[in-house]
Length: 414
Ligand SMILES: *Cc1c(COP(=O)(O)O)cnc(C)c1O
Image 1 (tube, helix red, strand yellow):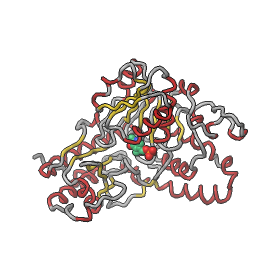
Image 2 (cartoon, helix red, strand yellow; image 1 turned 180 degrees about the horizontal axis):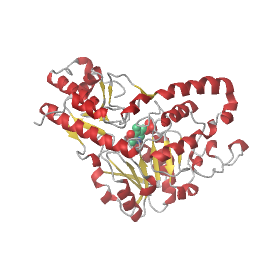
Image 3 (cartoon, helix red, strand yellow; image 1 turned 120 degrees about the vertical axis):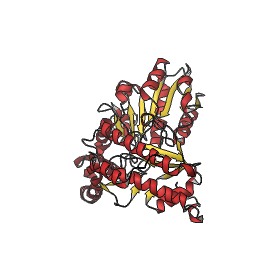
Image 4 (cartoon, rainbow, N blue to C red; image 1 turned 90 degrees about the horizontal axis):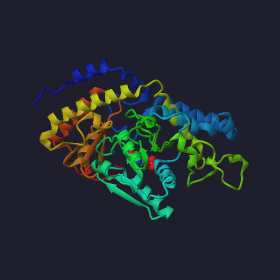
């Protein structure tokens, strides 16, 4: 067995890490190892003051005039432009609104309307279930007899046949971290006459994304994971600029109207990406997200990716040497280029092991049936955190600390 890096080795890596100072932007206890920023990002300190200001001054004092004087009405579009930079999208092609689930519904219906002679939505079994549920319900609602076809992730390219209208995939598998090749699959889809809808839930703020370069047609994503927008923060959606005027939202609410305050009886879609909005957006959530995005100003996603790969390689190497004899096995690709910014392991008694880890101040999450999952968020994850996580895991397994009844009772949210 190769010698494991020591804590001092990991601390030396932190001392040389150009992203290390970013951790100061977040409210995070020094003795907490938080490896769950892929589920709920940590709190950026600036959010606290910004939300307080929005509540006390903007809402509390300006009241209804705040829609104009504090620019509330334009926030979804402006925040969309800030997110666009992080996902390789042109200004004016992203809007922050609603949830991923609602946005998937809108975009599946819109995409299908552009390919009226085809009826299949193709996805994979690694996709997040809500995307699949929603695609099915969009097809049912359309009543055109469309079908959702689900294949194994490795079979996607070969399954893009001439009846496929829309290829709908999540770029990074939420369980295993496996990364789809967005550029290649989008090209294969286009060559076969199909459109693409990419879910960037585990990509935005995690890995460099180039929607423009990939010529992706549609995309969705959330902001409460790697982008740290807070619980239930607004999601976002992307429509390729040349398609924007060709589609209409099936949830054609007044916020997507060309003149919402004309109160016309007829719907007339606004120009550009804002036609994708439905109704009044949650401004407190928008304010929190806007402040959370300040952290990303000037951050190079390629530097984030480099650190993420180093963290994950360290995590895998250490866990495999320290815990393999307890039956802990890497789930998903070993090659960091084939994986997003997370590492998952299959592990006996995975649920109880994760509860014991959380009790030991190492927070990851459990994914059914047998996975412990760790998100790597390079803006605030330290190399020393990996050392602490793996040594804590080994102690839990060596000493069977997971074997307690209270660690085996499942909570509602895992
Ligand atoms: C987290 C996640 C979602 C969540 O959808 P919401 O509607 O925002 O709750 C959807 N898709 C994927 C791939 C996710 O990882």
